[in-house]
Image (cartoon, rainbow, N blue to C red; front, side, top):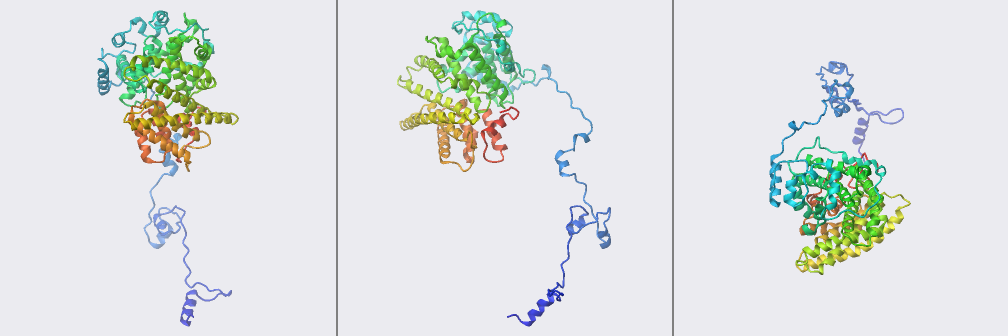
Length: 605
């Protein structure tokens, strides 16, 4: 029990009782006024209200305190704007931007020039160091032994005469006569090929012979898992040497790839744009039936389309509008001349049909790859709708590789391995078609989605069986102590990336948590197979493998895996996109629609 002393002490602290019977506090707490953020520093420090009278407030005067006021500080909105609204600034007009004259242009980087000469000397001795924006006759006579004259190669003005002389080329690349393309039916968007940066792009300092020797000796072997002599890109190079238009586009690609090899540039060099402009002028002339005296050269035209894809797809950031227009232009040309029917329904196995089939296959691959980014897909969708014709064209295109194997690798490679390589290529091509079907499914309307979904699931199930057999082949090769086929590893890596893409393409996000067991297993297999693929052979220019690394980078949450992916992701477009996704996204997940908006926010998806 409480003592009387404790009771009296508690009553004394409480104070006397009020009329209501409640105790009053003998020492009531002082009420402090919370300042509103304005006033002198003295009042704010004491947490009392200030009457804000300048220069001395009443409280400081009454108590004899030093009244200090804070210095002027702009508002938060003013500090964020920097100098305030534009209308409050002094009038100022920026200087006009004009092209730099050639005499005042930046000097050629001597370090780059020396590196170019080292690359060229390691392949073939460079005949000249003087740069010429036109094709160099001496260089091509030395490198390739062609018989083209200077009048054929000095720009597009002599193209009509050149087309007439090409009838006597060693290899006939003119197909059977077709009705001429209606120039008015060609989309006006194809005129984008005339837009170039020859007036403001920096010069690399390379000449055409150096660029072409780099393409033949360095680029072509890296873009294929086969021997350089039997690769399709070397075959296309030999075809381009017989046509001035295709050769200009090839040189535009070669100069740009050489610039990327020396160091990732912000823009293609002036030499690349110059050849692209020359090729575009010839290209538009060949599409006009009034300016053409003979039937169109379909192989050269489709090869020029292919080099346009290779040019625009290596310029960061991707130009969605140009690639979409290019896809529509290819589709218009193919449908106007019936090239799909011409190749698929051909009864005779001629060299012209095989060459055109191979180029059409590459165009299907390029356009389907762009479709993932929302940049095109019109031509690839046309091929997917005509599945039987597309399959026939693919079978025809492989005859180029069959004949090349017989002449170049028969002595070094047993004949039993050639069907195996053909089987790997068949699996890889089917994966390309599945990849484009998923692209269409991700952008399809709700009424069309169920049909595409059933088709993709059916094809993925068959592809999984094929890829499991390739995985067993890889394991068997490693047990025997020999390197497995690089294309088999690339195909398996590509398949696992497609699995992830299929689950994330419509109603799910890349990197979304929690991760399902199926996606986690596909990601683990993807990274493991990609690691062995990088250790087996060069994959820097294999776009489908590079795309698979980007998919793994967007899906993984492991910083160690992400760092390894960024180190081995060499494609400038894909690497830049992955960095943008990881840096700009607020959450660790991103949808395919958001990804396409990052590529081109202006373009309407």
